[in-house]
Amino acid sequence: MQMYVVTRSDEGKTLRIGLKDSSTTLVEPLIQELNADKDVVYSRYIEDHPDLDDPYLEIKVSSGTPEAALKRAAEAVAAYFSKIEE
Image (tube, rainbow, N blue to C red; front, side, top):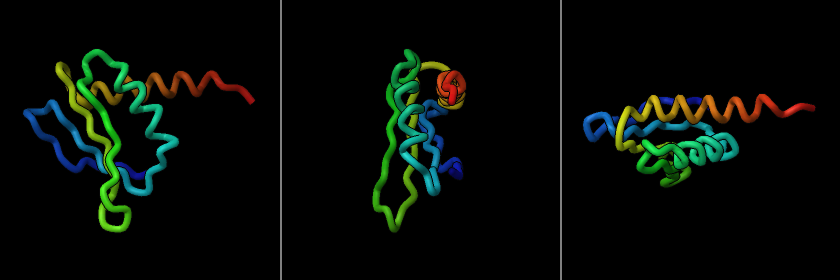
């Protein structure tokens, strides 16, 4: 999955991250962790038109930065999946 920053707005409280060739299998656990974070107002995965636009992840925080919230969520998801054994 390739990621790139599309837009940063609301004085740093909202972040949109474009996801080229993304999979909701990877995005859904991040959204769940983000929405469980007390500093996150909302996070959502948006797909406009599949042939015209890349989907993106939008994160809005009440305090801190969206990047910090995303990092916390990614670390929590990584910790969860690292405990899975074959």
